[in-house]
Length: 224
Image 1 (spheres, one colour):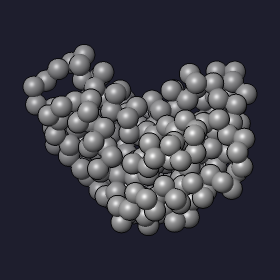
Image 2 (cartoon, helix red, strand yellow):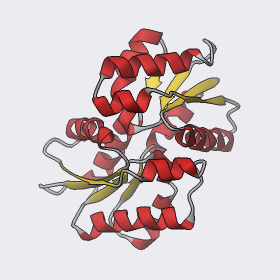
Image 3 (cartoon, rainbow, N blue to C red):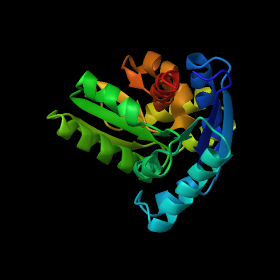
Image 4 (tube, one colour):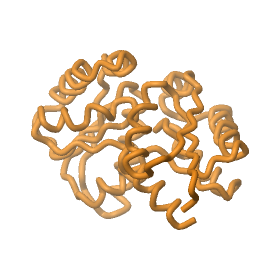
């Protein structure tokens, strides 16, 4: 691995920076995180129902290119609704590019859950993650049900850095789908700090994308 590692992250909100920084520092001590923020990425994709227009794809690709040409050893797309841009980026750049939640979803598939609740602060993000996870489970011949849960007050709590309120908002959202859930998936980086406390509060396993992504980046860079 290179002695001084620079990882560029494209964010839709500043609230996703601290959880990614923490996860990366655990897996890659001494890593330098370069944060590139476009705070309209999430709202614009959400307004389109989570469907990316060519213009939105190009916008994200331009931000990824900015990280690559700026010398990053890896780039991560930290907004879940833009993960599909990774496929194009991998064809264009030799620098490894990671989607926010691909590795978390692989962990979920290995767990073979019967019913998964996907928690998100944007309706588009909840729908997008639910659709992609459902597709991934089906591709592995797993019949698990995936339920989207929009947590209305979660974004505000995350932006304030109010962990207690964030756990409460996510817990309230989870209550709306009942107790017949055997795994909880947090869809967005900005909500990831609540994972451990939400698991303790509900007694359910809770997975968050930041940790899985950081492990994947570390494994990839160890090979270089």
